[in-house]
Length: 141
Picture 1 (tube, helix red, strand yellow):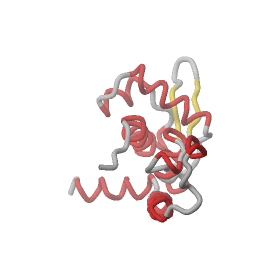
Picture 2: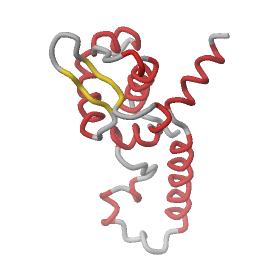
Picture 3: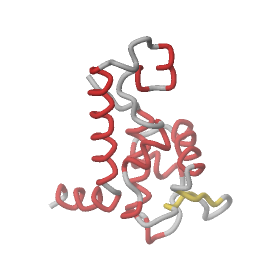
């Protein structure tokens, strides 16, 4: 079973909160954590990675917090997951440790997994934060 780690799950949820607040200014880490039921300490690690990837900006001090660095429609789920998890490698033979595999050059299964990973990445690039906001609006009707 393919599973996304909590880094990816919580990171997307945090970015969703920032997208909801996009035109209203900075959102504190405590507020994001409260809204999404995530620990502040864990969220701080994720937000630092997202900031280093230039997906969010932070402002320290009173009235500070976090804000998206781009419009919600310019930030894909793929960008978020790549910043938090790195490139998709659904099997070990696609990751950085694959060099030790003796079958890497002629392995048909590896080609299958690589193709699947590319399809997943392409799909995740088609969904942006604006699309998630639209989906939330449908749910709340």
